[in-house]
Image (cartoon, rainbow, N blue to C red; front, side):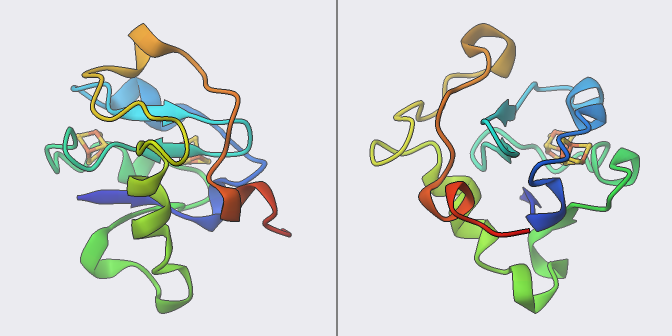
Length: 106
Ligand code: F3S
Ligand code: F3S
């Protein structure tokens, strides 16, 4: 699974969205989140991010490891409740970030 990390916060370049063949990159107010059950590990998103925010889960710098949980929890009932909607285009941008991202100081 690929994961979006801290450099995306307040940047949201969105180049990654255009690359994903399964449309599993979803938008929150401050950053984007990858749906871990929908990501097919195609890796197309990783090189296009201008701030290098996207990593394969095993390659995430240690300081940003909590973003594995942040990406997955964003889809749970405690945050958006989106679960696995099967495509970001159909649900559109959401108005809530993961609580840790909402208060993250960049
Ligand atoms: Fe964020 Fe990079 Fe995508 S800044 S929106 S992860 S291209
Ligand atoms: Fe999409 Fe990136 Fe996964 S392009 S399928 S989110 S590796």
